Length: 205
Image (tube, rainbow, N blue to C red; front, side, top):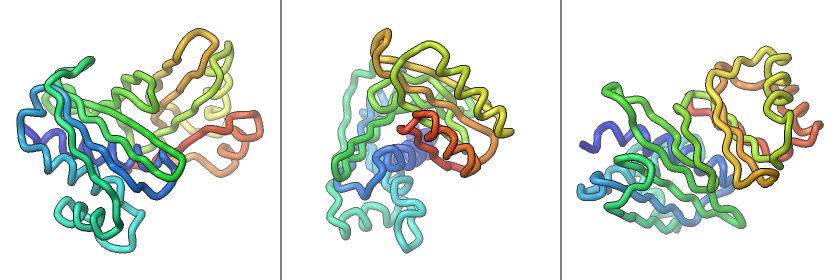
């Protein structure tokens, strides 16, 4: 039962720590839905494993990830909730760091299974997780999606999938997409130059 959710928890840990942008001091891993009736400690270890990947100077796996968290004084909280709002089962990972907090959630779909991002930074997102993910937070206004798409196209970076969510019309919005290749430094600089200051690239491949 837990097996398909282990790689999902690991990816969510990597995404959450990248969005938080700093060393975590608190990690919360929550299981929602029927999944919560099982011993989900392995999912918590997988999320920690993902959060520590390429961020600590030692080999990390699901066995030693909880020990690394304890050694570094990181508080780890595990939650279970029988209710799941949008999907049958959902895993939610929250990373709290200095001045930042990032929450992401996801689920598995289909027999393979495919791993989907269900939410990020307070926005509902329905997007299959890819090896190269981009998160752009901006003020909701006409033309933004086309402008960003054109910038990636001009840089020769193909957008594989995209999802957009907003708090309200004219409010804050979040654009999340997966791309086929790692973005160039020139593209990153160009995004910042035109006013997209809150852009996060997350490498999961």
